[in-house]
Image (cartoon, rainbow, N blue to C red; front, side, top):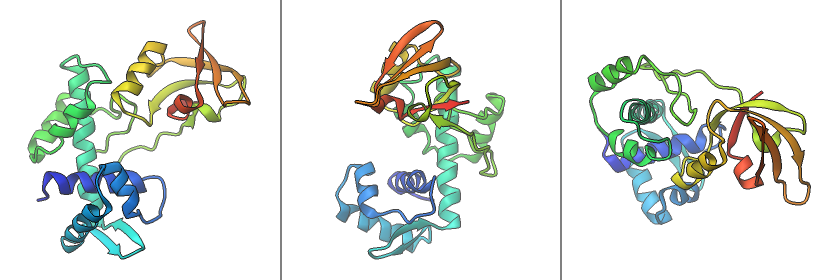
Length: 217
């Protein structure tokens, strides 16, 4: 078993290495954990002693197979709890992340499997992220960031890569929620902002926001 803090470190390392095969640097972990690099180094040594990560000084860290399984299990629990909070307790998608951060540390495999069954084995969480199955496998979802579309492209909003409450509230205010179809009409070269049409309404989206909206073409 791992402590809550150890589990959080494993999850952060997993997310930082999810889309590439590069070793994760301690400074990147410190930034995500909002702590000092020295504290990260201490925890990394503990995780290495438990054979949850491979660590070489100045070369970063990688999850071992055991560490990766543990991290994916934490991600699975987090995303299932988010679905439960939205679908069964009527929380909004911008309200569930912090609560799920607490619930993900409940260490009961039976509870997780019953929760999965109770929710009818959901494939995605309320933010569009895939939910691993009990074997740690999940379907990769092809997507393009809104900021990478070309004028005239049309697609479906299927996820977001930023889960902060402020960001999700902003999207909801704009009417940019999961399942909406949009058409990109204009790209402003000066600042990278884009103009889109959603349900007949023109909406201007900044480059910073557009890079976090995931579209299925």
